[in-house]
Image (cartoon, rainbow, N blue to C red):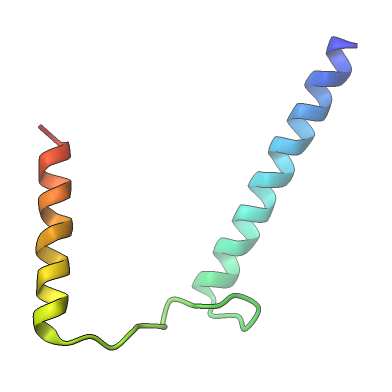
Length: 65
């Protein structure tokens, strides 16, 4: 019984990994199946973009203490 559980768990983990890897290939390859792709970008004002960049860099800097 335990052996069957381990096998089912391994199969589920493998399926999740495989689906994630296929999504990665579609995302990087700009396939129309996946939205948005790598080349998709939202338009933003420069001041807003700078504020977001600063906020993200502050979060990153504070988490590496």
